[in-house]
Length: 511
Image (cartoon, rainbow, N blue to C red; front, side):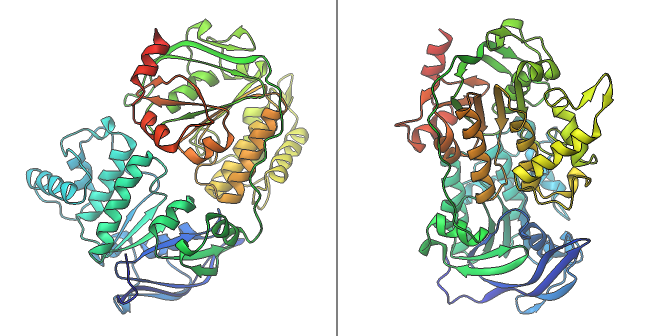
């Protein structure tokens, strides 16, 4: 941790970047000292990603200047940034499943050494920083946490002076987060500066020395995070007072989703097969399902949505078996789903918001009749989503890929909720979404449950599950623990369950 006597490493002065119709960054200035862990905070669309992409050489600023070690810093491409000592671990991993760890690391190096020497260096660095990793293992066989280690070690082999981390804990268990923080503190003590982006404000308070807060592309505040509460940080980001989601009293209704003996292979060669999954969800109830990425969450959503078929009796909606029904038939029966991958799965990137509204809501919102699309109704529904979920967009005619990640997330979740389903299954509903938008999405899910729907929330955000769920279960290697009431569960217990320490519960459930 920085003591305040270290030299300034990076200075950003008056940096501005504009795109047609939007100013992503406006006159942004801040500095980072050697060894400092510096948070970059802001709601979705605040300009965080644009700013770090300029520092990493992915895009060029329109105005302003940057200095590194006191000299001009104008990286024309990431290669130049890396040569100057700047490394970045992206939110989305850039790894090849069919290659091993050492081969993936080599692809990110300008002049990689021979494989045997590189494997030795990987073992050496992974042991030094407490990130155990086997250089000979296939990346496709690694957990999400281990994949992140590959990205981090690839950066550490470059001996960076500044390490940029974008949402680094979104795929980790609480225990893995502790390991990562130990590594980052060790790097900080050795003089490496860390620029840290996260929506998890308690993590920011625990780890970071200073914070720069962006709103609508401008710096609106700087602070020492540990001197602020998470709520104060969130309110500085959004510029308004936040209220926590409220749960309206709802009577427990009949079983609307019944899953028994659900076993299906993964459509992905490196995916996880589901093994004898069993649970029920009543109307008015929220079931929270946790699990580290790669343990069957995607497969579970596919099997419940109808994108992957199962035995007919394995899934029932309101008592009617539907295991052999496809997605449209299940939507007609009352079950809708929101997958984790918003761009490409939940939404077609090059289609407009209007067209994307049609894709999943045609059946339940009667947007097409006798083979003809009712574009007036479709546009009205798209406008309803944008207004109801505060989707920041120039209009419903823009392509889905033009929206920021958080705004697209609000659109796709809003599209499903506004269809008033009897059952909704969502995977990572607030992933990459700022505090205000996350609170709005959680409130909308709770409101849906209060109106009698059965809600299944699959998430890696434990705080989210503890906030919205009535009962909790954990996925590990395709098996689901016995659902338990959330009341009385601790984060530590949940973390262990996510890591697989629920073998007895699984065995009991299978018996």
